[in-house]
Image 1 (tube, rainbow, N blue to C red):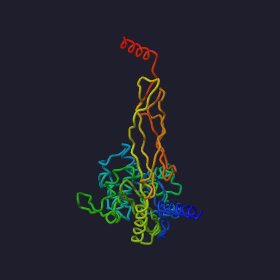
Image 2: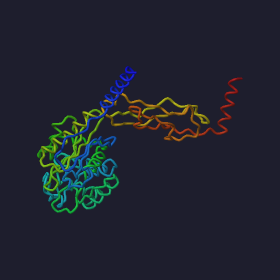
Image 3: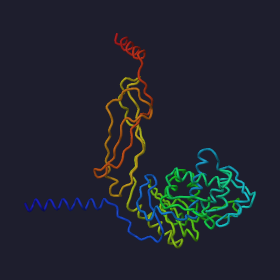
Image 4: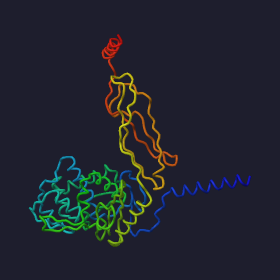
Length: 380
């Protein structure tokens, strides 16, 4: 009996030790900021949060939404990077961070985007908004509509720059910043600008240096936007990618630039050290037998799948495929035929559908008769 009990407790100890090691360590450091959040972009899984839903002034982090609407206009074909943007008198008077546009000065949309993404140029942000929507006010309406579409529940924009000397309720939350950051990252051309450390505009006559120092000093940093005003304090949406994992660390209301940057780096370090992304790309599978159709087989494939897991669990993921032996026609392209379910530690972590790659119409009587006749003649 003693030997049995000893063996039992030994097994329990080993099991508990394994479970402990498979769990990611919690982030326990106290960050010097009003609010913060850390998420993984593809899964939107939250890894850490502090006052993440409390609205605060965001300063120039506002421009993430400005850039998002510009990026969407470009990808939708409503604007081009080669478009010429003319500076209005209003845009030339923005003040704050700027590239000192003069009324009537023209610059390509690409140069304007670069100036906003790298140097946080308020004048370029307004010029872009006016170019897309005709006026800054109309653009702000669209910003708030887009925020609502994205589920940003604690956000209200009053301008495209984040300047807050005269605003009444220009606010957002750390979670909402993470949401719009993840949406902007879907437009991959934006990395052509957010990863720039130093560059120039006006044919080399005016230099730009990125306000986000992590771009130069943090491994894998690829954006996104800083901000600072007396009301907002020092803010940042810092994004970094290592391997397939893209993290977003948002800090709002830090007392200094260096404290803000250090807080963002600590969150990113925590995410990369403790988590990993298990991902499977979409792929074609062996065809499934088709009954009652023109063809004998149906081409099928599964979709993408990704899950954020503790590092120790990545290599132990298992999966089960649920697929019928045959499928009856008619079948339409995109119809769900089966699924692949993924497990970690015996617990389900998600699934991806198996879908038909082609239409498979039901065979008609005439077609069936011709096939049967053909077989009969071949036999004879």
